[in-house]
Length: 399
Image (cartoon, rainbow, N blue to C red):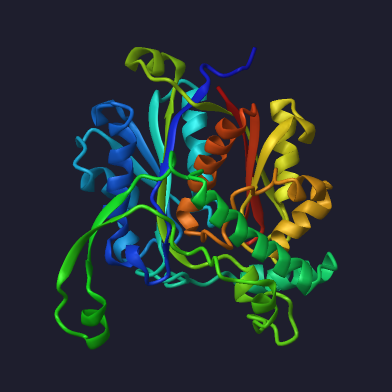
């Protein structure tokens, strides 16, 4: 029997549609977008927000509209009772996977019974890096700290990854995401968002906006029209003779996602029907210069804790921060054939859908749960590389 007090049950997992940079969602604040997501989450499960004890909310760029503990502000903006607490977590790209970890640990230990875990990042409105600070000289004495794009290039060089290989992963991401949208694979996880947007003529002319209420329900960053030839024509983004381009890197986008995590006791009390449960997590620290290559080690730790191996895992989500991260993961785990078969990132990822930093951990978890159900598979795994040399992974079991 497990040592924990209760299973950490995933009652439900939802997300907003993802908005492209300066697209539809650029006209709404992150706390207001998040409020719609969490309200939809509890409403569709007939849960009174009073029952929620805490919101664990991931957000990387905690400045301007995303400052002042946006986790607490999400509850207040949603109109929830003041008794519902909230906190904001920054583990860089892994922030809302860490909130999943926090929520599960709180339930496993018996300290909390009902937690909302998720996150948000409005990269159009609060630019990535706008909260940039300094690092100690003691760090710089030991490590050559570089931006993530340079690390993506370094990984490609060390693992001998070609431009063609990376472009193919990028292209495949877009094709898989387009197919997933067309086949309705995201419909259970996406909750439509309502917001006011100005007409294009007002934006172009700088006139006072005439606002129109719209219902936004479909991811808009996917490039259906792209081809391998178009991708090959793109210039390197970070190094003059490099292999990392805008086409094989994750997109800057806006979005929010959330999970409802419950104890067995609370699920029974409220008559909830959980969709899955968390089995284990793994975290790993790696060289902060290479920074992005720790996924295999984090996965190995999570799988060991769950008592499972790769052959047990039906669906694998690897956050597509860069195509080189995915290619390095496949090389180190030997899962190349599983990728070709569609078991790894079957519905695209950060390159096609986008990577709203603080929301992505919850987003890929929502996508993973839906895909496990679609396939009638039992176990899934989601993992993410993290800035400054970390990685995090979670093992999920469909119920």
